[in-house]
Amino acid sequence: MSESIWSFELEKHKKIKPGTLLLAEPFMEDENFKRAVILVGKHDKDGTHGFLLNKPIKLRVQDLLNNFPLDFDAKLFLGGPVGTDIIQTLHNQGSLLPDSMQISDGVFWGGDFEQIKKHIRQGNLKTQHIRFYLGYSGWSSGQIEEELNDNSWIIAEGEANEAIFYSETNNLWQSILNKMGGIYKTMAKYPESPILN
Image (tube, rainbow, N blue to C red; front, side):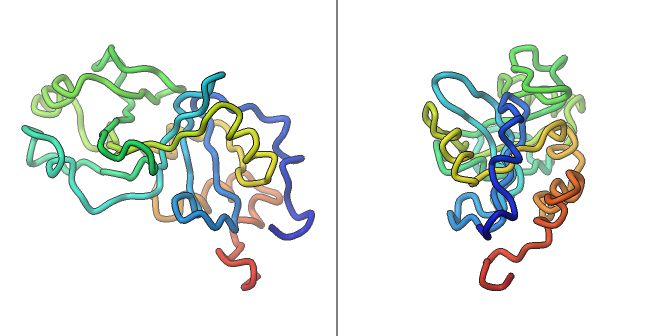
């Protein structure tokens, strides 16, 4: 990244915890995470687990799950490069799915798929309530901290519910940086390649 425009020095007072959003630094070259917005679902001594929020894929949930209601136009995203044989969910209906885990205000992870299908059929779960993710993003113990120190990630706080359920995914990275203001608003305008800067 360009010299002294931004560094982890601006981030180090922030804490990673479930519900935190990680935004890829503007010039990240890793194709898996270029302009990525990741929701942290778990962060502890064993490592970090999260979901890419802005990588929709063309498959439908019905293409991958048996007996899934055919008329439910669920959004399906690539959650990350790990475990792409697993579908996981984020939703805002924790009272309907008590076996799910609350990540942050209004954001829940998981739930029994039979119960999810039942509530969809009964009209209790609608497309604005739930997102489906193929795979996840994972880091071993200490790895995300190393990447933060290498200026690979920007930490955003307090945006998870809006980012998942109420935002357009095609410009989510820019939108969150713009809301953060200051240097982050400037970064939202950076081209993907530093040579175009």
